[in-house]
Image (cartoon, rainbow, N blue to C red; front, top):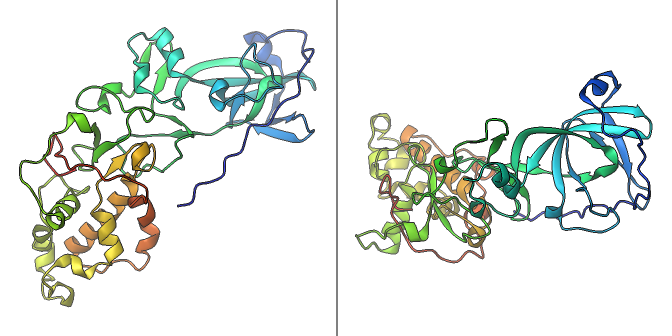
Length: 346
């Protein structure tokens, strides 16, 4: 999967005088101001940029000069909920803020910022009226569910959001420990180069290498690769490939020609089997923040369903499995470990 080209934030002209003189609207005044669906901001080259309701944007922090290029993490990020104006030059947006981990820690002291990456933001239920003169560019914040086996991949320098902040209740959702490693320490993509992920339904968790134990039984490479496939994402049962083939559904079809072979995996394309045999890992040494979770899981699911139902592989299977993402070309080989919950090989 090719990496998309990043677009730099556009640079705003330095504003010597504010375009508004009446200050931030009060709540009562806001209700009387006319609504708009979008507003336009011009950059230093005169190019116009349109911002609409429900879009996410980079916003210039107070005291930061708009005529300088800043690192993306230096900007505030907010989602536009409403747009209203006093006049053509005095336009405001109601913004729902994404908070940095450090800002969350300022109101919830127990929130551990060391478990967050530099591009991580927390969606808050805190709103402000913001002058459109402070808007710098469009932004994207990817929603990241650590337990999801279908999480879309994003780049290591993309902004992402795992948690929501309920400001008045001083609460973080979901509970941080719910998705943390068994040691209780959250996955920090900037700090943790490799995390091992167990895809079984009752697990769906990632673990630091130092928190895992090596398997007591020594396996040759072929047996080890087979054990990886047998960590099925569709069942918590400890089923071998032969167990799946020999299940009740498959017995009804045991006379089908495709099962008249010594190894059930031989009926599948080699690249699909290879993708399913991969360790499921995430981290900068494992292909990125999200890693190869979705790709490897999709490969195992196709094999599992085909064996279970005695059916042929879909002709469009390559559209369902990103083989390149499952087997990152630059990934370093990782030791083999056992899941602390289900004891599967991961």
